[in-house]
Amino acid sequence: MDSLFIVGTLLVVTLVCSIFIKGYIDKRRIEKARELVDLHDDLRRMQNSMAVIPSVYFDVPTRIFVLKRTMQLIAKVLEIGQDNQGLNALYHEMEVQLEKTLEVKEDSTKRLKKRGKIDHPDKAHEIRQMVKFLHEQIVKSVKAGLIPKAHGTRVVKNLKIAMQRTVIDMNYYLAMESYRTQKLRPALGKFKVTLGLVVKSPIKQYLTELKDEVEKRIKDIEKKLLAERKRANEASANKLASGVDKIQEDEAWESKKNIYD
Image (tube, rainbow, N blue to C red; front, side, top):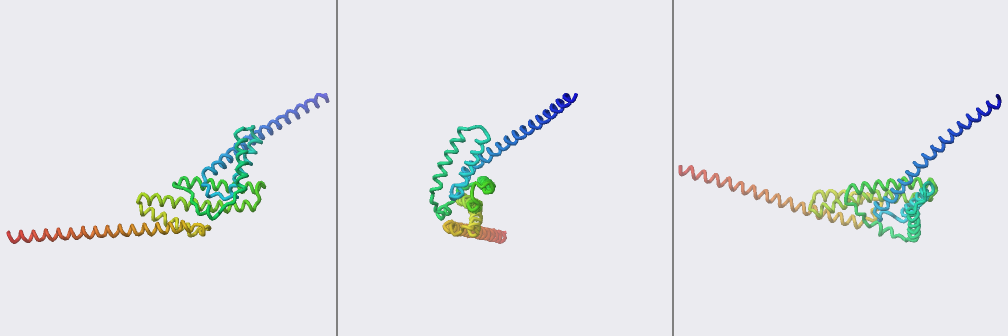
């Protein structure tokens, strides 16, 4: 009797343990699948950021971070998921790029003077979203110890500059497009917005050439608009004078008719 009770108890305990273990394994499998999906999503967005954000917005520390973070994500995907020949090749390609980037001696002044071609508001929005994503990734990387905090601070500073440069470059290219198509008033408004952003920019000392060009464009457009107003006023005055002459002619004709009548 006692032996049956013990056997029954063992069976119940075994059954409960097996259910618990199965539930735990299923939970871990689901968590692993979700983690893999998140890693793939982050990896895809990291690759998109390199393709979408203009290269002139990346300084050397930011490039190093992007490459290291991408390599870390690839390594995690390979660790959790199955071996992937394409990802292995991408990892080795990133290693080569990282070695080359570490040897680069950057001329910040020359880079900051260049402009990213942003000719549509949707493109500017996409770039800003990618910059925000990189900011999230840098925070995660610093917390995980992938990069030192000092390096992370430099990258965050550059990302803030990139956010502002996106707006400056977008307004500049939209202004130039309006200017080329002779839409002078919209062009003038966008050039003035660009000038205001340049003057308030934390890197305004590197944007003197852009500032001079925009100021020149503004003066040129204002001169053209003034000439247009003068021509319009002259045309109005001539039209008014013609109207007065016509009235006088009509009055003279009526006077002559009255005399003959």
